[in-house]
Image (cartoon, rainbow, N blue to C red):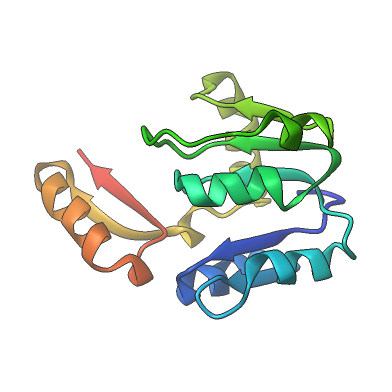
Length: 157
């Protein structure tokens, strides 16, 4: 992100190493460090203006709403979960948060393809595994059993 200081939270060291290589200013393994404490230190206690929650883990989403945003911050929900969890209105209202749900927006594809062409983003840097489509079940199994070795899996046709 241009002009932004980026912090990445994950539980897999290899993913954090890749994030650091791609320019993240700070990476945190929440298995070994308190994420709220580390992120508050990173922002000087001000919180984040923009948070992307991509895990689909409701505990992480709750943390992103209750503990990490700055006043008037935005939380963009990318991850999917069907688990219900309480959201207190006071957590949204007291900081005037904007919570944004997302879905696939293919109108952005041309812009992203330009980034690839211009070398701003190297898609190969995040593709860690390739499987034939006929072995999609093995790809999902591999992802579940070896998360430390997976950023993105591509299925080939």
